[in-house]
Image (cartoon, rainbow, N blue to C red; front, side, top):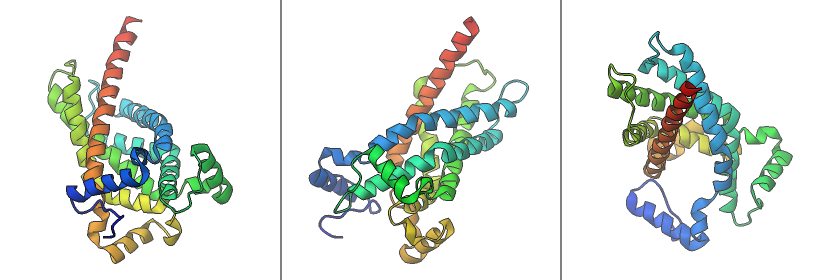
Length: 259
């Protein structure tokens, strides 16, 4: 490993080393590369995800209004596919391109809107949809796993009393567990998706070719690069999102009943 390089695949020590080098070379702001595109996509992504999930689950619930775990898996799958096509793929493509561009010797993107304009001018709208297949597979499996785990825990916690309210702390724990399950379940797809959306995406003929080249040139462990840092980020992210979701649903139910 060179003096100024870092890897996310060999334990917490090198993870800390990577953070230190990033701060040294780019300042604290270097840890937030691609933040603007991530923020622009977070709200619509969550809106599509939970909106589609609620729509699908409204048809999947039984006569008592209960959604079982198996049906929640398919509802989550549908929600993940929808968010991948509508929001995630274009936003993730832009984010990955920004991060790779800022790490190059001569960055050409001056900001979010400038970057989007340059990408569309050079590659057309299709340029923001690189790695669509990988993204659909990744987001679909992601949300299928998360909603399946979350619904399983929720049904277990509520038992025979569907009116029992879930404490936000309990929701956070369940959400973090669901997030961890999704990380271990689909990190390989996330690695493939990132490669397909980067500036070197032209090296791969298709999603399948990308997976084949990674396996051939780097070995099976390459599919789990970034698992540890992603685990910390995703667990916290999913926990927060599910807490907000549950609390907003509670509030809307109370308001709706009083109208």
